[in-house]
Image (cartoon, rainbow, N blue to C red):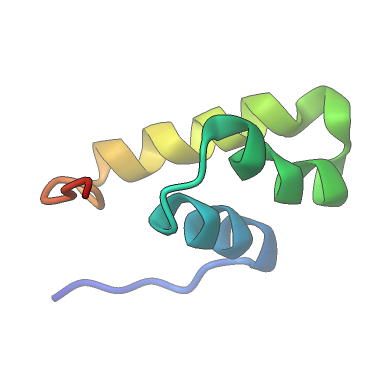
Length: 62
């Protein structure tokens, strides 16, 4: 088992991703935290990192 601490904004993004939200909805917490101009880039970077870390390796959609 691995764990790491997560800052508040990435934690909100991760919660949205784990609730199977679409990308636009996933960007909403980022817009609140860093502004609309950087929200999509920040959300995409977070997703890329989680995929690279294997966080969603066993993820199954309903």
